[in-house]
Length: 155
Image (cartoon, rainbow, N blue to C red; front, top):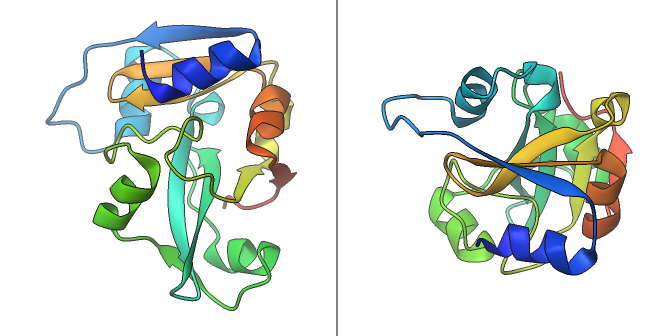
């Protein structure tokens, strides 16, 4: 059981776990989840950790078929610049390896934002904290657990 699953259980929210055989040769973890679980990529969300003004880390949750709008993220967190955080730093802060980073159950609680498109679905899919493992849950529950807002951050 991953920290993400433990957090969801403790919170008492409704969720489902979906598992698939991860292929190490696949170069896009989120799209792999979408393909192997036969899901619309718009419902599968990836967890990206950004570095704000070369100082603070934050989490952005966006559809796997989208790209993160760094200017929007920086503006939302009242910073001048956002860029992808270093993988080693991300692993240290979240406790998860790249490709299995869940927005839930991270070692350090990081400020988070979820793309507004998540609110278009009854449920969305996010990493459960391991490659090949996805959590299906209500976007509102995810936002509540992360103390996150829904914003336009994907392009």
